[in-house]
Each structure stands twice: as C-alpha cells, then as structure tokens.
Length: 446
Image (cartoon, rainbow, N blue to C red):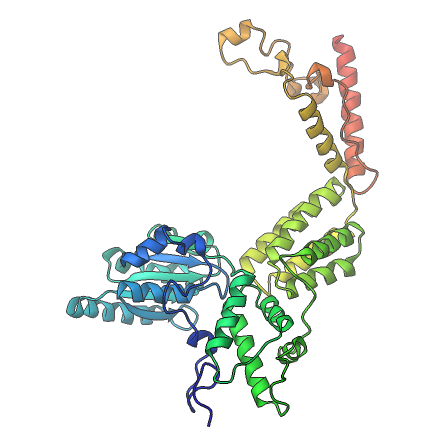
C-alpha cells in the first residue's frame, strides 16, 4: 500500500497538487516581490493583520487565491471563497448574513474572496458596496481583466488595486523542485531538460506547472517500465502533455529570433510565415499582448501611410485581445497579422521621422521664426511676434506659401511618398499643395 504523500493520497479523497502545495506563510510565497518584499506596504499590512478591501489583478497562476488565503490567516479572519462564475447575488446575501452573525457573536471578521469578480455585471457588483463600506466584510476580488474597465467606479473607489505579475521561470523551477522534494517517499528524478520543458509549458503559471507535474508523476508511477534510472526525460514530458513543446525561450535569444521572424515575414508579405511564427510564440508561453505591440510597430514602420487603416487594425487587435483574453483574443492578433502582411508596404514615414530626429539633434537650438510665434501680450507684438503671419483659411486655395522651418533648414525634404497604396494619393496631394503654395508665394512677392 502506498502511503499518502503529495502525489499519492488517501483512497476516495482527491485534492489537486496545486492546492496541496499551497504556501502556508508569506515566506513560502514565491514571486510578487514588488508587493510582498520586506518593507513593502502590502507585506507590512498583512504582517500587522491590518488589511482593507482590495482587488488582485493578475494572470492565471500568479498567486491571487493563495495571497487571499494568506491574508485571511495573518488577519485571523474567516475565509469565505466565492466564484462569480458559479454563484450569484443570492449567495452573496447569504454570506453577508453569516458574516454579520460571525462579527456580532464571535467578534471575528470575514474575508469574502470573490474569484473572477469581473464576471459580475454592474448591478451585481453593487451588492458588495454597503457591506464593504460598513466593514461587515473585507472584500478581496481576483481578476485577470483590467479593473478600470471591468469594475464599477463606486466599487473600484473602495478597493485598493494590487497588480500581480506572471511568475518568473526561476519561481516555477523552485515550485517544481519543492513538489518533487516534498511530495514523494520515492523521489521522482527529473532530467534538467524535462524541468526546462515544464517551466516553458507553465508560462509563468504555477498552477499549470503543478498540474502538469502531477500528471507526469502519475504516468511514470503507473507505467510498466517504471521510473528510469536516469530520471524522467523531456520525451516523457512531451508524451504526457500530448503535445510537442516548441523551441522557444521567451526570456532568451530564441525570443528575439522568433519575433524577428514575425516582423520580417510580415514585411515580406508572407501570411503563412507570420501566422506560423506567431503561433510558435503563443504556444511557447509568450504574452500575446507583446505580439500585439509588435504588430502596432510593424503597422507604423513597414506599412505606414501606404495603408493608413493598418495602424487602426493593429490597435484594434490589441484592444480585442485585452477585452477577450486567451484563446479567443488570439484570433484578433492573427487577423491583424494577415492584414498587415497583405497590405502595401512603405517605410517612408519611418525614414522621414528618422531624418527629422537627426535634424533636431544637429540643430537643437534653432529659434522659431517670428511670424509663426503667438503674440498673447502687447510686448510680444512690439517684438514682432506673429508679424506677417497669414491665416491659411482666409486665403484663396487655403495656402499662403509661408515658411515654417527655421532659416537653416529651409527647403528640407524628409518625406517622399512611395508610389504604392494610399501613398500614391498622398503624393498627388503633396504636389497639389506645393503648386498652390508656390503660386501664392509668387503672387505675394515673397
């Protein structure tokens, strides 16, 4: 008979490894040093047992539930878990009544932990307000969505927002090490490459890492071949996870290699290449918002004004992913990538901006010509501010042909529209304006 351990429990009773290995103290809690480092306000408040209502905003597996439980333990309050996905306002009312009785007869407060609080609509969120204000409950909400968009203003104004970050690879590695060390009468050895794959698969999510590890250990112990002397290798990890993990390290050289491949595939108008490399990045645990930001950059650098809608598409993809999350929002990123890859390309604005920046560095102190300076005071008018300025809208053709660059930069041409896409039209417009300005300048004798 196998004695109960982290990986082999009593018959008829099951609790996920991630729950069994949950930290019991702040010292055991890994990550979020910006919040729980010694001397940080939240750390000190928890240690003092003096914590108010809050919302914990962070990705899955970053420790939101664990932190809420630790807060309850350190403040000696009853912990009442509640999911906005599976329960509603009637259950909130029941919890409130229980909290009132507990406070009145036991003198003990209640932490109402509302997981996925953003799933509550505005009216449902209002159910928390009076009880948070009266101190009947300490509300600790958890969300993967931006509270600024998902919580009502009245509720948000009564909550302190704490932002949790994905766990670093070193944290995930230590969590796996703890589980292997503490969880077995018969230690399960993992080859370094196997640990690397588990860390990569986790993508900063501790729960995901422990669930995968638990499945791996169950598989190895039930296997007829038993545990190999050399330890569990990466091939076994891939077999258990039923997937081949991509060669991608979001913190190392491969990260830069793959995002470079995405950028160059789109620049080269290769739809399949763009989609493949983006899929590789997401499968490797990359934050899709990082990819979305790069698409915005590509829209401005490589598509530019050849298709002005490209930037709108890229920004819309970022907003759509932010709104939907994974996996639904990933399709918006793919859509933007296809649009950018098939759009006409021009880097003329990118080049013009680079030349303008160089000019600003070369001529950093050129004075603004007097005729285009504002003259809000009589003294400024006496000094010639605004003298000779002609209002374009009051002129025929809306063009006066005045100069707007400093004397040393007169005649500079940094932006030359390409003969592709919408920039063809921009080129025609620019030629039209230049003809109007030239004629206006000749008519005025300037």
